[in-house]
Amino acid sequence: MPPPCPSFPAKDLPAKVQVGPDGKGRKTVDGRAIDLAKDCELLSLLQYECHVDRPIKPDSLTRCWPVQRWFRRCQDKKGMFMVETTAWETSYTLAWAVDSGAAPAPTSTRDPLPTFVTGIDFTDLKDKQ
Image 1 (cartoon, helix red, strand yellow):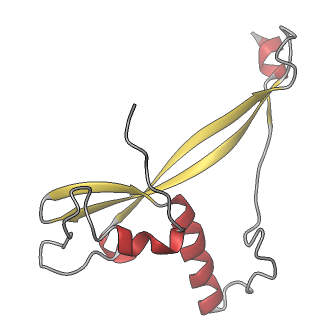
Image 2 (image 1 turned 180 degrees about the vertical axis):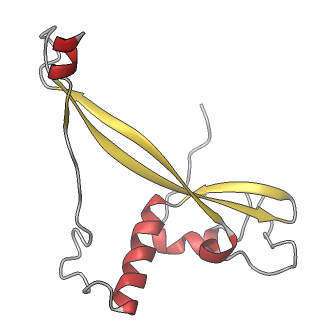
């Protein structure tokens, strides 16, 4: 069993990325602290979360929703490393949009960003095969 992975708020990620898994500080090749937004390449991965409506029925409908995950590929003096930044990207983008006037400040702390989820109905695909 792997060791437990510590959990922390997304806002703490820029500070957490400054320390490697060995507990030692990370620095860029020129000795600066790592800036996630400026020093690290943004990458994405699209996964799907699927649910079977009635698992007991053999012809039950399966619905899938896209789940976008974000990562940053960074480089320190020791080489490249990757950090999942999905929650941080959401809060970082929202803060930038509000600060720049591109979006209004959220009025709810429960769900500050709109959620776009689209179900995919595979019934038609099954019939065409």
